[in-house]
Image 1: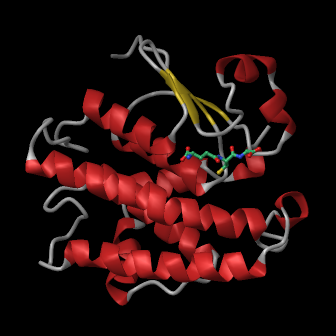
Image 2: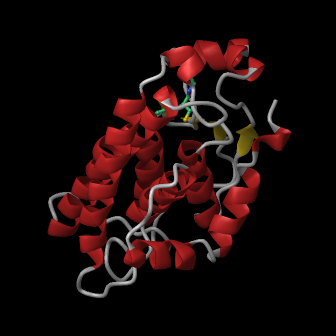
Length: 218
Ligand SMILES: N[C@@H](CCC(=O)N[C@@H](CS)C(=O)NCC(=O)O)C(=O)O
C-alpha cells in the first residue's frame, strides 16, 4: 500500500474537503497539489492534460483518474475502507441506501448550493462571472432547506451516523454540505446542527479542514 502514489488536486472548497477528509480518515499518504478554483494553478499543464473538466477536486493513483468528489470518496472507501469507512457490499439494502443518500446529497443539495455560489453576490458569490440571479439564489436556498429536512429524517431512529452505527462516506458528504449551507446562512435543522457539531470534533475532520485552507494555495 505504501508504494502507491496518490495525488489529489484541489483546495479551499467543500468539495475538496471531501477527498482530503477521506484520505486522512483512511490514513492514506497522498501528494496534495493545492490548486484553488479560478487560480493560476488551474492552468498548470499537467493538471490540464489530466483533467479536461478543469475542475477540482481531481484524484489520481495507480488505478484511476477521477474528478467527482463523491466518486473519489466512495472509490477510496471501496478500496481501503474496513473498520474505518466500511462499505456495504453490492446488492445489499445498505449499499442501496448509501447510493440513495449519496446521489440525493450531490444532486439535490450540492447542486443547489452551487447555484447560490454561481449566481450569488460577492464576496462569496460569482455573479460577476455567471450573472446575478437573486430570485434563483433564494429559491435554491429554500430548496436546500427542504432537502436538509429530508436528510434529518435519516437520523429519525436516533442513529449516530448517516449510515447507522458506523461513520461512513455519507457522513463526509453530508457534513461538507452542512458546512457549505452554513456559509450561505441557511438555518440547519437542530438535529443536523448538533450532528454537524459532533462530526466536526473528529480529529480527521479537524486535520482535513486545516489542510483545506487555501492560504497556502498555489
Ligand atoms: N460535481 C463536482 C463539482 C466540481 C466543481 O465544480 N468544482 C469547482 C470548485 S468547488 C471548480 O473546480 N470550479 C472551477 C471553475 O469552475 O473554474 C464535484 O463534486 O467534484
